[in-house]
Length: 150
Image (tube, rainbow, N blue to C red; front, side, top):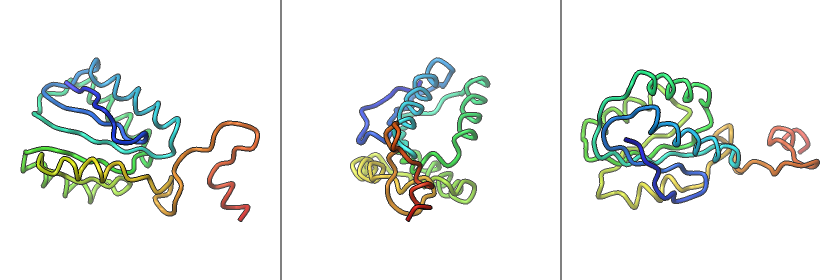
């Protein structure tokens, strides 16, 4: 089951995993990600893993589809787990997906994980500063439009 946790920063979606994942537990996480992406160009994830369980096929397909649609929208992912094998999976995943920085933390490093994931995003391209989306309105510009004016 996935449950939302108190976030260390507005651009961070924090969650707890304990057991099975199904559509019902995944839906609020996706909704929370969408809400934060409406406010920020890039967001980060913090996942505290107590124990793994099965993921239903529908939830897996939904999760993969969401991840592919939002590739590049995630800045960091902090994974907190006592599972040592997960540290190795995290290291391997860095070679597969370079658009998100992923780090594994032990439960003793929980404070460091929260501090690291709460760091402000660098922006849509992963280079430079300023990640918050401009407020909607007549004078609002995309980061690309501002860059071309400079």
